[in-house]
Length: 132
Image (cartoon, helix red, strand yellow):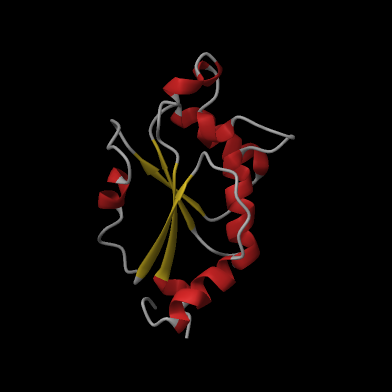
């Protein structure tokens, strides 16, 4: 059965957001809002519906201090920052958590809006016996 402690959620939010300039000079793309919510907040809410105490790894590079202040202002718990000193490329930040004890990882782009029931998503793959 599903072992939540062997599952890691990692949100990639380290990009420069160059295509959305000049907006991303002030805020990183995952924190830009639509209808008063950012894609990053939407993503975190989806994960927390699955498991309120789930630790979330957040990979950041550009405007790190803005992310830190945003997390503090939202009073978010269980957010583990994965800091990139220089951009590591798409999914490059996985290298920084590779020695953690986990069996599976759900890797999420932090600049996308989506709605998903992670329990159903994970159970689908569990039934197929491809993970967990």
